Length: 65
Image 1 (cartoon, rainbow, N blue to C red):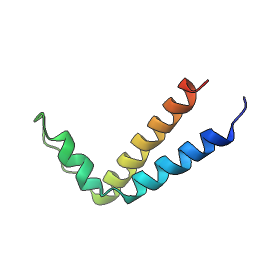
Image 2: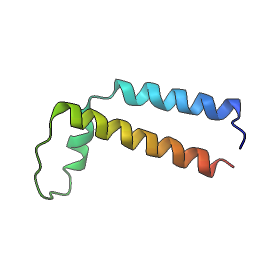
Image 3: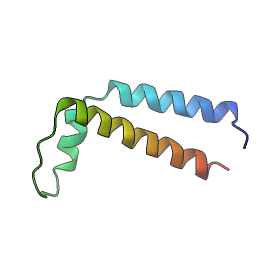
Image 4: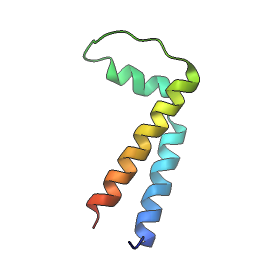
């Protein structure tokens, strides 16, 4: 598997955007369709945001082929 420079640039750019987003901003966007309410810790929210970012990056890399 080859990793091209533009893919690395996309990952770095996405990481920079995600790291600047406040986790509560993402959670507020998800509240548009009310569902079950679950309270999680700040650390868990951060992990959730980074996991979502990782998933998006991996999907972009897979579809860039």
